[in-house]
Image (cartoon, rainbow, N blue to C red):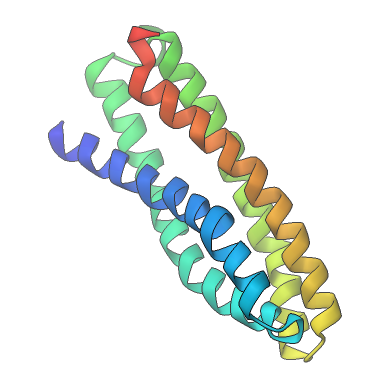
Length: 151
């Protein structure tokens, strides 16, 4: 079980921590330093790398989460309220990520390929809003997951 817990927590840290870094540190620095015409290219390259890790995190979170739920609690019926909240919010986060990846991120890559910085900027803005929502949900999941049965 220690392997499942370690992989689960590590996956959450990579995903939520990555969003926190991108939103709270990188985004403001990019606005200050990088010309508007180049921001789409920078975000496209950055998100391409980060999203590979998010895909791995999603898979590991699902596998380890259900592994622990069925091994430790005998299924969802034996799990505490915090496990149900964590699962529900985690699934919402995954759906938001899938939307970002398959819609605005795909359009960002297309805008960068077509050398269209205006459209790239629009897509970066759209992604920023959705990542902000996912970051808030992710912070709640971390609090519930870490404090769970003590809350």
